[in-house]
Length: 135
Image 1 (cartoon, helix red, strand yellow):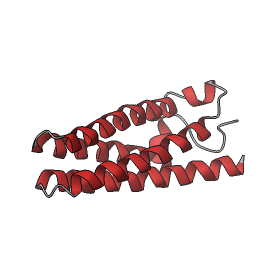
Image 2: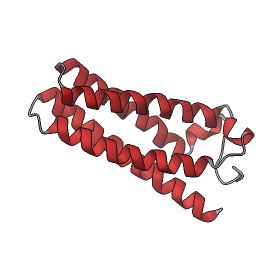
Image 3: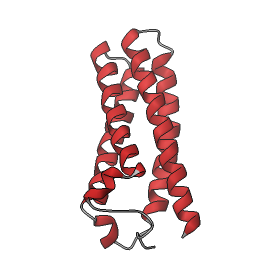
Image 4: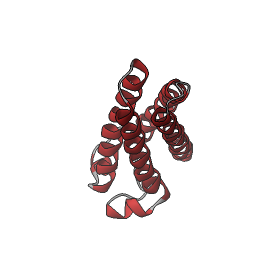
């Protein structure tokens, strides 16, 4: 699979997929801070685990586009990213529902940022799906 369909390099951050990835990182980080600042519970721990893993993996994917690693490796990146995004939509819906239902202010705020992250991951999955179908 070639990567001519989507821009790579530093110009990637100016494209819609690049902006979505940056917004995902922001939602992951803010949601994690809201929940972590409120106190620990099993619900909060699940949310923090979800957001930290998403933060790390999304940062690695963003760096892969910026530093053109995507173009150098001949593996089905779009399919991998599509499934990653779908899984994270499901994870974020579950853990955001758990923390939002707790009734605590910080958890509710974290849940809102988690739902926003889920929307962004769904948008990213849709974009990757369109690239897969177009290839």
